[in-house]
Length: 265
Image (cartoon, rainbow, N blue to C red; front, side, top):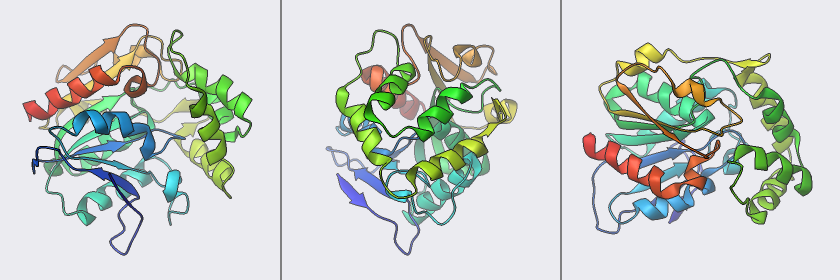
């Protein structure tokens, strides 16, 4: 797996994992959620590796992109993601986004549909006004490992056993200068009072690429009902007992759906 930092081409920091079989088909680009980073996709990238090249990026204000020149809402992040697609000279990508990264991926797809081969969204932001704004604001401000562990447990299904290292590594990431202040600023932009800004779902459904949405019935960040009654061209996959982190809770099923969507394209 190759790690690249921002350079003159203005690509976001990324992990680029080639396909084991040498395939040169359109790669899968993975976009993490609020407060995460590209490392949250390691298990998915490993599962994709036999047949698909995958690229996981750090969004502005996250991971190694904490000092990115412009930091803000999903629209700002979408511009940086598309800039990365162009910098890497990728004709098309299969775009996968989680939570805030789902909203980012949807915006990229609507602005440059010719560059998106398929779109897979995991508990995406922007599909309805409801959002657990109190949890996200507390998560943005947390620095203590014990507090972080208690907060992170709410992101997963009730039966999921949270690995200790997740809370520890998340707390450590907040020790970097400006990390907490940056996350608080991003939270202020994606949360409008006590609701979130929404996407034009009817426009999203008009895109020519296949679209899948994945949600868990125990999502305590964005309610599962946001996956109900979507425009008919958007396929919804709802998993019982899964929380807000399907790529970490059910990675095998998520990988299968990503590959199914890519095959349809």
